[in-house]
Image (cartoon, rainbow, N blue to C red):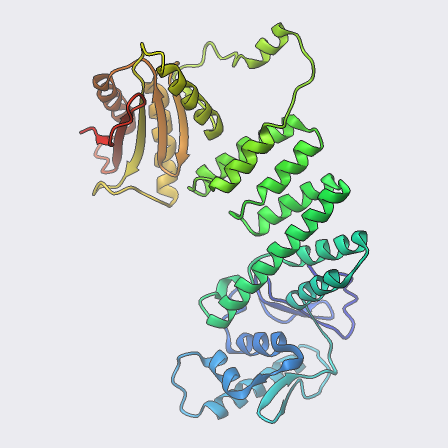
Length: 408
């Protein structure tokens, strides 16, 4: 995000995400592998160092890395000379763009630079000093929106870039948290919802969904909050292949407990509770929060006795019996496994896609022998021709939860 660009006589620099430089509306670095040239390494180091500058030795190390260079000083001067020619050819005023004094290189002060990372830092510092809550909030929000991705995200194998990436990620998190505190205090829940969604987009798997959930609950948008709750857990489990953190699940559960309903009569409530899927074959596919609720309810019912319940984990494995963890083939196999399970289980069984290539099945009122029969039915629908991949099964009793037992 670069605000209020007038383009004239200002070099705009993007460090978040893909490196780019823009002069009078013209981009000086192409998007494809723009950060992987000596010119780019030089410009990233010089421009990001700002008024502090950068020493000759450090600049040489950043440009050439571990490569053996016969004459490092001469090689560095050559890169700088070529960079100056490229900048002049791009339309920048003819001057000494990269100045050197006492062994330290600086970008010329005659051409102003507007760098997204520096702007984010500046706004954050201004917010810290600002006493008016409304202006302070606006500064934090502006700072947050400068952060559009990781700092030079394709180059984090480089030590200084990895260090800066961690620093700016921490700064972004701090700005979001402080902005949310101010929004909460002033009741700016619409703005909180927007910021929560943005933060989760640019800094995924960091529990920012709890911010959006809190805003929806506070606004009384209970149906939106319920859908967001389910979608969030499904996103973590299916798209990312991860189980949401205990912190996030705790926050979502606590916020979900605050949601209410409008007054209604019992018949209407019962109709809304019904799935209205009498003709749907197979088990009840449900998101993880629902599956967990069913499991916990069944556990309580087991205290009364009378039923035998098993939990089955189905995992897609490769030809050597190792769990498959990623790739387009895994996604295709996961869809086939889901279909095979759906064709094999009973309507009274609950099914959840737990992660990439993994499904949970809650089998009510059955036996361990029937679990083996179910396994054979799933294999029958899943395995095709001489297919070398397969499914690995683990089954636990819900009653006594013994150690995992693999069914052969």
